[in-house]
Length: 176
Image (cartoon, rainbow, N blue to C red; front, side):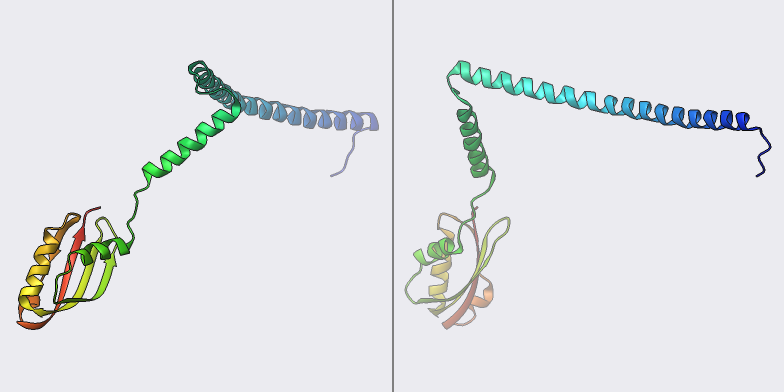
């Protein structure tokens, strides 16, 4: 581009261009600051409101005598956290507890050879073993059914096919 303007005119055009660039930058900064303030004010108000609520709760605790110092507040928070964890998580029984329950009703002539535990909504255990007689298996199943803590006992008909030296598989469902 060939510049045919006189030197004074050229300086005036350069100044005008710089002024426009400076104005655009200043307007952009002003818009950016205004948008930032519009986003910052609600956050600041929310923080102040939460601080006021926490302060009021602490004052209520102090008035009731539950809180005397800031360490009491942290102690209350720690105790609350422990209670929430204890009440919120279900206690899962160890498989040995269920095995002990089954063994407590073991009758003579029954030999248990294996346990397979399946944890889930309702804990289930598959019990394998041998019995000297078919009646021994039936007695063991009846004892399991009458045991507190067991909701269901499933003994398939294949457990009753042989009359002597019976190998059996029983599925037991426990209460939670």
